[in-house]
Image (cartoon, rainbow, N blue to C red):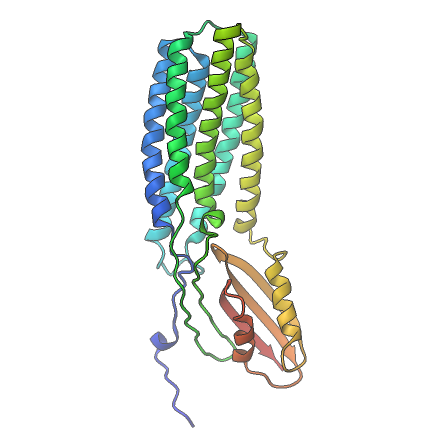
Length: 322
């Protein structure tokens, strides 16, 4: 009988499926400080110069500063607990939870914008236009800088394989590099949307202030606020939808599921799927549990090798029932 190494360390493997996004985390930290600074300037300016547009922009920017801080905390927590055995499939979903919470805050911002816009429609107040426009332009410039920082926050990934043999279970770990990092970093996307919302409201405030100064169109201010609230709501809904799908593991409609089924039809022996689970454990990384019933013997390693054609499958468990 051949010798079998029973040392657990020989068979164990890491469950860190996502390496984080250090550049995005650093840039988001910078954005938090910039946003908090401009927030205080806009609130003070709106109070001093009696600009409801600036005051509203400053107060709703405070919710963005809170959400951006939440994004930084999510990155830090995911990194800190990356090797904590309590997290069966890694800590990446901490970042997704941060993105989901940020989306909820965005909806709150939209509701606040609607409330303040209606209030300004019903009770307009005189505005010191020149000073308010100057502060709004400063806010826009800072928001554009923050957007540029977050847009460039793409993570660095590397590629390696570590297949592990076992009795009926095979594991494969793939870390591959692509330009999809930012698109699949929902925590970064949430921070980016908060900054874009700030930039949008700054633009709308500038347009409204110029309209009031040049043409006496005071109604532009609340109307622009309602337009901005609508756009923010649309962005928040998209983020809620995408992050919510990940949090509740609603991934069985991904094209990768059909790819797994197609591979099973190409196995060297007739096989039928009795159980299939696929869910995301990292940016464009999925875990897969596949249970097959076969009439002729086949090694789980053969199935794993064929499934390995798809590098998105980072954790594969195969069960053979004959």
